[in-house]
Amino acid sequence: MKTFLIFCLAVLLIGCGLKSVPHSQNTNASEPNEAALSHYNWGLTNAKQGDFAQAVTEFKLAIQNEPGWAIPYFNLGAVYGNMGDLEQAIRAWERATQLDVDFAKAHYNLAVAYSLRADGSQVTDIEKSIASLREAIRIDKAALAAAKTEPAFDKIRDLPQYKALIQTSEPKQ
Image 1 (cartoon, rainbow, N blue to C red):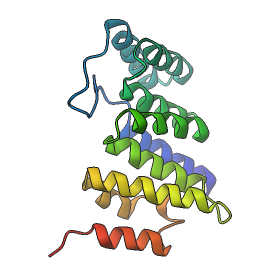
Image 2 (image 1 turned 90 degrees about the vertical axis):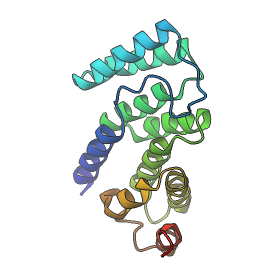
Image 3 (image 1 turned 90 degrees about the horizontal axis):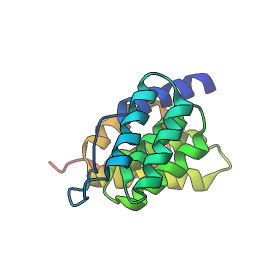
């Protein structure tokens, strides 16, 4: 089961990360400097080739050159997720959402990661998953449809908080 969840996370992270997004989902963000952009692009190339360790290095160099740029943090989280390091992935996505509060995919990935990390005794991870999912849906309604079929939410799908979020997020008819 754990292998299946890690596989689902990897598929999600590849689908929701490692895209060539040069600046930010925030349209007011300025273009990153040339060094940061170069390291970012090398990070994407390395990640796509499966060289995750080098991708981490390149994304960290992009961040070092442009610390206020959210996209490298987002992709760094995706790489850490693909490496199976959920804790580092969460840290990276949390930072991405701090830098760009309307970064729907980062909020969604956080919701997935918190759900995967949660067990019966970790109520805070469940609460964080629901809160992150709420933000993702608020920003991008497509997150609602994705959440309904996301395998990572299977362990929280029957909780009243999850059901209430889905119900209140449905479009009114």
